[in-house]
Length: 227
Image (cartoon, rainbow, N blue to C red; front, top):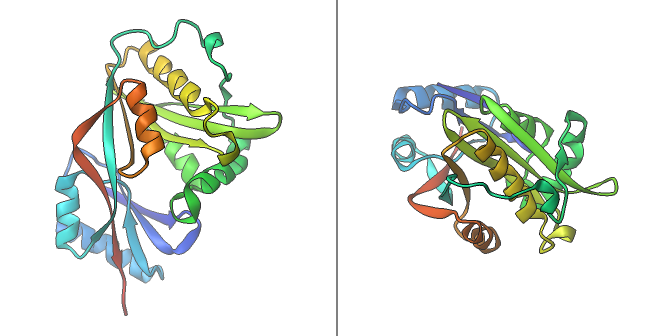
């Protein structure tokens, strides 16, 4: 129900990813993961975003919260845009050869701790049964990109990243609108996205596009490993 990979940009941190979201992890299984990370030489184990019930279990096994995220939802009960040609920026297909340049954009946007590398962006794209990845270009430069997914009747805006030189130009807005329309076209009922509790620009954007914050905050947790 879990797997370990290297944390993007930091080989000393193991990334603990829970792949079975319908089953709560046991303390015993978490301890197995921690020991595997320790034997691999990791100095710390860090999780993806966790719901409170899972975060409580990890807290009981020595993990501490290091970041909090807001989870937002938007109903998909009407068309989002009449025509994608109405968008100010034209989202284009995000191909596999764009991964290195997209990773550079993500690391610039989110910094070395939270920015993705090529491998983790590839993992995000394959995290759901159906997915869509689009980018906005300025010549050969990637201005921003969005990775979206669908599972059952729900859609997920899994990653939205815009280069600092292209912020406040409508790039993020057009990428989100394009992603939401893709979800609506596939008859999904709702879209979900998360962002940092202090990421005011992103929160304002999502609010303006009809997202509503849910009660539960998500937690990213970490356990430092000592000799």
